[in-house]
Image 1 (tube, rainbow, N blue to C red):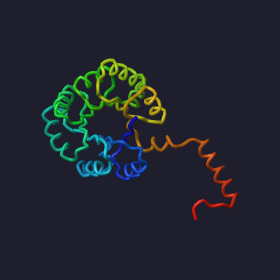
Image 2: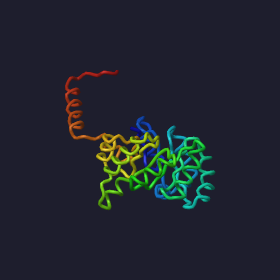
Image 3: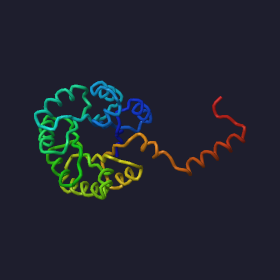
Length: 218
């Protein structure tokens, strides 16, 4: 499973990329707003830090507008994945660019029917939002199971990119189901490192080692 960071904060990306566990980054207009940075400037910095796909979203909602914006967005770097909404115009733009061999991430997916359309349009990634799905009383992980089954039935190449993840269980369940990618905030990635038994065990080992009075490196 690939891990993408869901952020536009350069310091977070640099810190977590140093672990060697980050395979890509996803951004959206809300994350750009939160960063307070210029869209093109911050996206270029992210692309320079990360070798894998960096999702950068269009602001236009119409087909012609998406094509105009995409021309500028794809120019930022070779590892850009254009992010388009799951609408008629968005899927039309997706087909246009995937036919050219470019990466496209179709976002704001909330049903398996929508995911099927995105795969038919040749999307590189489909981004079902599990946390937001849970928020309105639906089972976000059931959606991932349904998409996985449909894609496997027809050997669609579109990668399932689980988005709107809120906690480590979302990540573990996505891995259990067989999602290709999860995008997660840095906070959730940090939480995955933590377990009280690990912390307690390490504290005991450190204490016992100090009692030996030995050193390994001098």
